[in-house]
Length: 195
Image (tube, rainbow, N blue to C red; front, side, top):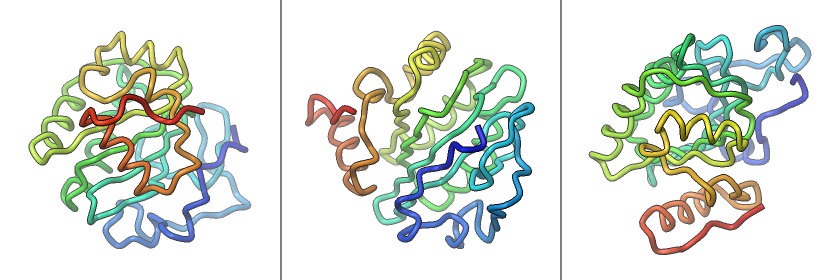
């Protein structure tokens, strides 16, 4: 797992560690010392620690004018034991909401497993962004993880599913990703570009 890096092709245009409004402002990374781990597996030092023992993230992009962010995840999303949605909501999302971010693009291809718990924090999150015309989209989940999210009925709260699980987001610039998702969510396009 130590060789799975967060997507880095936009780093010259946006870095959460250099964004004064980011929860990870002034974070420094040591490329030579791997200190974060998931269970007994060391992970790449570019992933950000949000306070969960099993789930890490990277804020890849924030656009304060369009009010959207793209966040990539790595690890085990565990609401049953770790209450990861609560940790994510309190340490990252609440701070972003305070900065006006109401559209969330979550990249889930490196989420290895999902264990459900209460859905209170999902509902709270979606209610808060919906009041401002926002949404949460979850992209490219592995099939078994998508099924676990669906079994937990999260698919009724987030935009996710077949189109969202095959979206080739890496070939686009962030504003275009946002535009495609917004058009899809608002129903003006039938499907998203696939991988």
